[in-house]
Image (cartoon, rainbow, N blue to C red; front, side):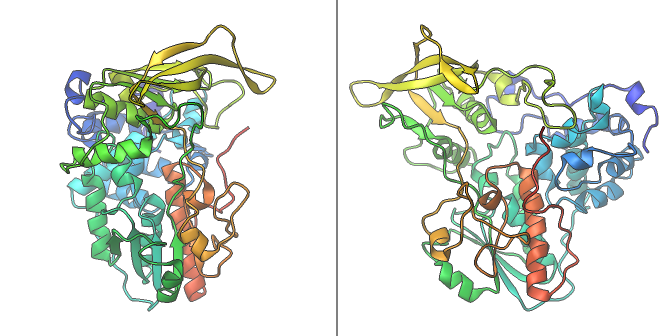
Length: 488
């Protein structure tokens, strides 16, 4: 193990973010330099807090099966090359997860039973950032080609993971993306202040050097039919995500100024990257209301702050979570506790236990206010509290309430694949859909989930595709399609 007394000598410590008044003036990451560079002065001691438990439950918390105690020990010993080798053995894109994952591994850390857990996510991002800086991330082209071809539809984390694994196995892989650039929501859904796109671009460059082909600006299901795709390729991997947004069909929904988060965020990301967006949807000078208290809502909050919103209110229908792990969500489950993101540090007000009754408009047909009411749970149902109705100003309303599954029109209908009871693409134990040779990875089959689950599914689906094409595989398959996070 690392330092046998590390967890006794050192408390949990994280890197300091740039001052709020500085970082809201730009779109750069909130950490000075980069997350990994900001952590270097403290990361050796933090890695030394890992106890190398007899049964390391951090492995259970992470669907990728990251060998966390080993790379903690290697960092503590200053063996950064060994650390990145261990990290890449289970995770294709630690620069993504180290910035974007909510770290279920940390809530499963054994030290976290009675102390603050190890800063696993911070150690991870320090390893990969240092590896890029020292040239320890290199292309791994296949030694031979199989002669088999695979199409991957969607270039989010699941699609990219599947594509990289299959390319390295010797197959000729083409990744299709309907947006003008590769990356899926990593490109246009994640704000620059959470992950600068240089981290995505250099990973894509590595994949190109390995042999993966990227075809951006192609709408599979429109420009290219599902039948054409099946005729061209020996196997197809559907990794287009769960992009059907959840709506709020109440009185006034038709008013102007009410939008889905994924109408707002991609435009802001394009502008932050220097592109011009005609008629951009912006929060500048407006009273902004964000409906939804999750990560996407926080992304809308941070973006609206940088655009100069007059006020920002984030609404959540659930009660405010507790500061500490509730008794009904014991270790090692991922608890619903009060968390403060970098965006929440910067601006805005969070309001819990409220339901939106109606959108109110002005004479021009645009939203001007929301009518809210307080709610509480009674007998498992949400009940409105009389006398708590009120209005709050709103000139821009953003829905950040999650997604209901993959889009059905187009490719899914053309392929005529079966759907499960939740509207996701059904798959068997080998990630294959009801159509032979068509596989499903990520949110398209699992439903809305975390980036670590998407990458794990991409890796596991790649192993299934390799077996389908060649009869066997040496690729790792970290999870079954039916696996879910541990809950009580």
